[in-house]
Length: 159
Image (tube, rainbow, N blue to C red; front, side):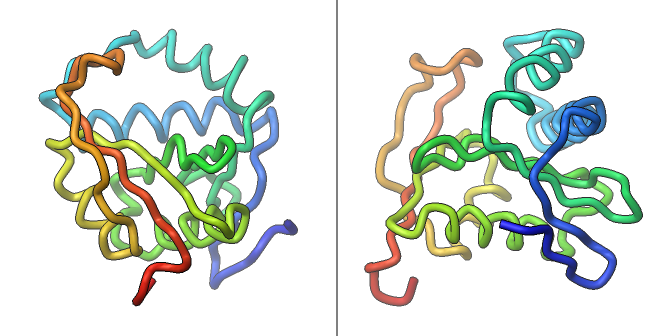
């Protein structure tokens, strides 16, 4: 898929040179959205993971404005694995555009996990046609935080 320009925003596959900005977006977004959730890794561990694993080895997308990364998304199989928008850029349709890319890339459906306490994310995914399918106690994630698995299926009515 080629880069798509929407006004002054470009959505494209991430390059190695984006890794540092991708990590900072991830860190700012996680901190703002989930202040009460214990992080399983230090900032430097997150930066290394994004630089060495995520950007070079996974299907990583970025949204940029004026060549600066303002959002990131990772798709893995039929999973939407990471979606983080810089807090200063939330509420502008960027997350919706990245979800649209994920749906285009996984036309048969998508799954994702989010923490139960992240009510804003849950509302966002539900607005975009995702349905909560499984609630857990968090024992299977590194943060040990109760989470919820969402699914989007194109064959569901109204989706």
